Every structure is written in C-alpha cells, then in structure tokens.
Length: 174
Image (cartoon, rainbow, N blue to C red; front, side, top):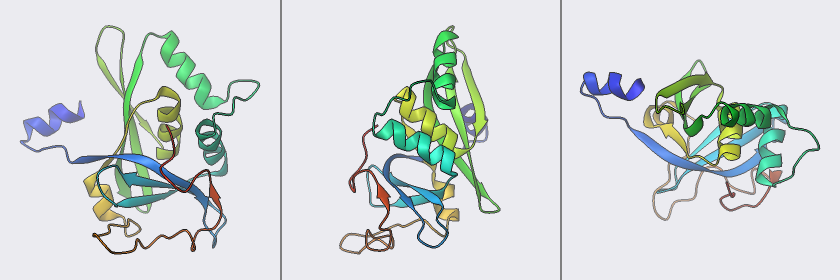
C-alpha cells in the first residue's frame, strides 16, 4: 500500500535499516530508551519507550523465555497460526514528539497487510519474528535527538552519559 502510493507519486522510499544498538535508562527521567543504529553508518536514533515494552524487548534480546507467553509472543503466535509472516517493521514518522511505526506482513496467499503500531511494540515483535527494522529518513531528519556522526567525530550519545545499559554495548543480537 505505502510503496504503491509513493510510486504513483514518483517518489522513492528513503528508509535505512537499523539494529538495536542499546537499551538503556535515561538518567534524567528514568525512562527506558531504545537506541537504533543505522547498519551502514554511525547514525543513531533514540526512542523513549514504556517500561513494559522495554522489558519485553530486553527479555527477547537476552533470550529469556517467560513461563507463559507475553503479549508480543502471543501476537507472534497468532500471526504464525493465521499463516502470515512479519516481513519488516518501519518507524515511519515523528509528530509532536511521538514516533509512529507500521508492521508489514504478508498473508498466506501473498497479499500484503500493514498494521499501525507503536515503535516499541513493532520492535518487540520484530525481534520475535526475526525480521528487519527500518527507519524512514524523514524521521531521522525530524528527530533533534538523532545522532549523525562523521568519521572521527564522537557521537553525542556516549556510554559515559548513559551508564544504565541493558545488554552489551555493541550491536545487540536479533
């Protein structure tokens, strides 16, 4: 749906693939932050998320299986049982300091399906479905918190600034 609309208008999709670089606590507000990093550059995008969603992401990163399925596990299981596949998730926009995302899926007969989502839920599902995560370049441009760095320049977000990192300091496994 989205690609066809853009193609009709003669526009090109400008998205970058990202990985989770870190999951940490904002030292000022105590709110969890997901740091997404462009796989081809040092550009990073922090997204503030809720504690529940951060926990769901952390459990999957650490490969800790809860005794019963959590909400994102239930969603993944439902998608699989319906014969569908999650193809990718995309952080699509930033409006009024709120990020928006979509989950792109394919039905068993090959039809695309797109669901609106919060980025944190989309990312938690992407980890469980082992699918790529993308960010629209306009989101990077619109976010005054994005951290584009050039070769030899220190990123604005450093490990000293953000001491409460969950997981490894490097790119986290998916």
